[in-house]
Each structure stands twice: as C-alpha cells, then as structure tokens.
Image (cartoon, rainbow, N blue to C red; front, side, top):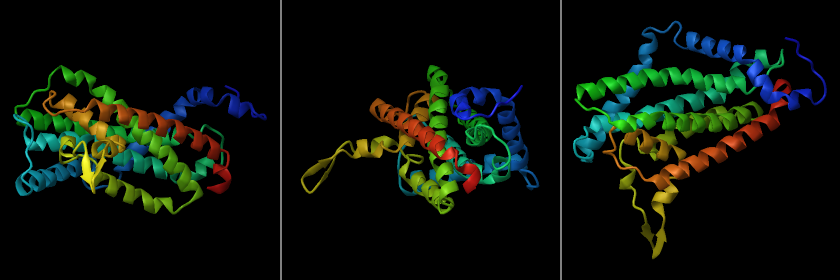
Amino acid sequence: MDLILEPGRAEKNYWRDLWRYRELFVILAWRDISVRYKQTVIGVAWAVIRPLLTTIVFTVLFSKIAGMKAPPAVPYVLLVMAGNLPWQFFATAMSEASNSLIGNANLISKIYFPRLIIPAGSVITSFVDFLITLGLMALLMAWCHFAPDWRLLLLPVFMLLAFAVSFGIGLWLCALNVEYRDFRYIVPFIVQFGFFLSPVGWLTERVPVLWFWHGWAVPARLLYSLNPMVGVIDGFRWCLLGGKCPMDWTTVLTSVLLTYLIGRSGVWYFRKMERTFADVI
C-alpha cells in the first residue's frame, strides 16, 4: 500500500485513512492492554478491586449510615454496582484518552497517521476493564439470586452511549492537553467532581423535578441531567436490574443529545488542532 502525501490529500482522505490504518489501531490498543498491568503485583485484579471497594464503601455509606433505600426486591449493593460499572469505565477511558497523545509524543512527531487512532485506542483499552467489572456484576447478581429480564438486551445501547461520552470528552481533553499542559491537573478534578455529581450511590429520582428557591421554580432534575452520565447510569440500572430502578426517558434523551453535541464538537476541535500536534507536542 502506497501512501501519497500531497497538499489537501490528507484532509480529503482522512476518514478513509482511519480504515487503512486499522492494523495500527489494533497494535496500539493491544500494546496499551499488555503494558497496563505490567510489573504490577496483582495484575488485572486491580480492575476488580477498585470497583468492588467503591461499591462496598458506598453501600455502607448510603444504605447503613444515610438510611437510603433501594427499590423493593433490589439489594442496595446491586444498585451501587450497576451505577459504578459505567462510571468506572467513563472515568478510566476519559483519563486515558486525555493523556494518550502526550504518552505517544515520539510516535506522533515521526510518522503520519490519523491521530484520532490514539485516543480511540485508549478508550478501547479501558473497555477491557469494563468487561472485567461486568463479570463482577454478574457474580454479585448470582450471589444475590437476582436475575435480569429482557431489558438486558438493551444494555449494548447504553454501553455505546457510555463509549461515546468518554470518547467525546476525551477528544476535547487530549487536544487541550497538548496545547495547555495544565489540563493534566484538571482531569483528576473533573473525575472526582463528576463522581459526586453522578447518581452512582443513589437514584436520580431523589433529585426533585422542581426546586423552589426564593419563590423561583428551578428545574433541578433537568439541570442535573446536563451531566450526560446521569442518563447512562440510569440506563444501566434499568437494563441490569430488570426495570425495577426507574428511568426518566427525558434524562436519557438529554444525555443522548449532549453526547452527540460533545462528540461532534470534540471531533471538530481535535481535527482543528491535529495539524499542529507534531510541532507543539
């Protein structure tokens, strides 16, 4: 396969080149998977320990101390785990994508290839951890003698939505991180702040539809749903827990719309900055 570099050609054939460089995409993704837990003591067990400990802490904190209740016939540990599952994927994928270009600076400065491959590969790598955590969720459901129903068939739809949210925000952050290195300090703050703004340990229905403040009716739940992970988490719970956890379709549709806007704008900004990556990085 011959690669011809001429003015305007790279721009015109960019999306076709993504398919032509699919082998590089696989190589980079496999490399990230193989080195992620290299020289670690317990290896891939980290993908189980982190969500498991978070689930235990949140279950004790909200159900035992705060006295919150899960819907009837739903163990609180499953409610938390079903919310923690997409959040851990989002947090890991977004963090990995934001640092992906910096981590491949030598490769970017030497050869041409569609740079979009790098953040996309980092999100795919995080999907491996997601599958491990999904297996942990299945074990917890079996331990609690809880079986899903037909709604489980719709889980891939919300998995795709979680992937799109992570990828869209990751594109913004990785492009900004190349131009402004201060963003490497902002990403952990976004993850931590977003964790407490997402319904990982509680139900979205606890947020009032309207919040009255000094005589003004504030659409609290609508504002809360501007966090795109709210609809994703609600969708995961609805699918995994057999519809026993309520899902507001308005919240889900808001997440879909925001994800589309974030993804389109992320691709636009990434492509705009891409031509300068090799010089700036």
